[in-house]
Length: 86
Length: 519
Image (cartoon, rainbow over all chains, first blue to last red; front, side, top):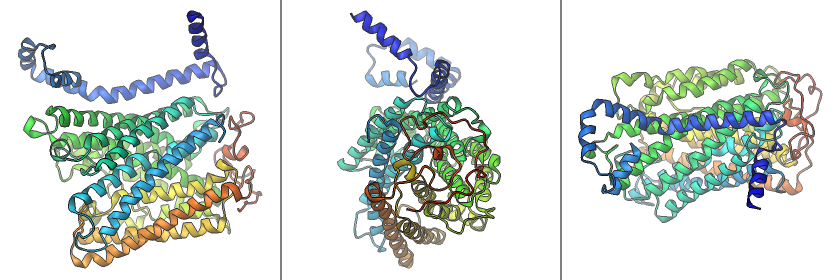
């Protein structure tokens, strides 16, 4: 059954991998690894968010004007990319 | 290699991959040195020369130097040296290799399709607006390979924090582990910034979104800030693991604990942290805001990075009369370490040359190559030091000593003329030069040929040793590290049972009487 297979896969993912001695060690390692991954994401996108925040603050009127005349669906793909980047 | 020997197999995958790129980068270097034999440009055109030094830099930096020691040998030995069965995430280790290969294929495609001519630094607005070469393909290759580097760093940090054997405290970690830990911090914190820089470059080049191009409202210096925020620390990604190697090798063959162990460990961490604060010295030409002047204080990194050289090379009161090849291969790095002006981690005599080098040689000097030089010695020494453990075979000692000598001579003959040339005013990245520089250029090319022979020799005798070399014992050098307390090559989980550590690092009291095995 599909659900059995799913449960089995779930159990397997929780099973103790051979490089670890205890389940606690495995959980600690996964948690730390995830935090480090999140730190890399902050380094990745943090600058863009910061730039957006600063520009939003410095030129808030321009943002207001632009938003009133912007139609996301009719915008050219370059604009989408710009929004995505910002 | 049997599939179940996972760490070993993955490390060999990395080794093959980076060796391929080393030869590729070496081929470009060969063409550069051929061209520079004569003062006139008679072998390649200006455009081709631009592509040659760019592709040399891309292949060597992003696909050889950055992954080399951590990915090939760190993945193998870091878990063993802390008494772990494997890395915390063996599958991420494999994923990291796939990413390196995919990134490498992008770069390879760009090189075969016509090359890229921006220089390995991809300065804007040339790279985003004017260059007609394969900028995007190359940049995407570097982007993907960057995630390989990030994942290696992530894996090492978690492994060092969570996988240490009982008794393996932080103050007992071998210096190779410390240096790779420091390197991992840079990989994890710096590489994402390179990734987003490449994304922005992509957006401007493909979609003409004004980020770096002043005509579109951008700022080209912004690119340099972002690029060097990663690429300055990246020079420490290349050099810190090599320093760790040298710590190991010098300690083992002098049968002495590393003098100033704690200092070297903390200095590695200080280099990793301070390395992030000094990228501004790459902007001397471009200039930067006066408020950012603090980030030009490159001398800040020189203090911690000089210590390891001193602590290692100064006190060797007891060097064994017989000095096997690993030490010979790696010692030159301590003496020929004329690395970038900014970081100044030269031996004190050479440090006196630093000031002129700052002014003239920063542009004329072969700084990345020198880095490569030191790095090569680290890798070279390290391959010899750990080869018996990796493969269970000894290599021919006489050939290894000869190779060390040839590399030492070739290295100095290649790069010292370049230092003098830079001092005399030879600019970087030019292939046409005044006649009076020719003698030194010919010397440098001759040195590069010698160096090539020195690197080909180990290729041959390492492969030879796999079949014909003597079987290695568990501890052929009489070393004290945990990796020597298990068979050569190691079993599936590195140790038959998890070791319990009761000694400080580099405690030779229990192995002092053991003889050195020579292949």
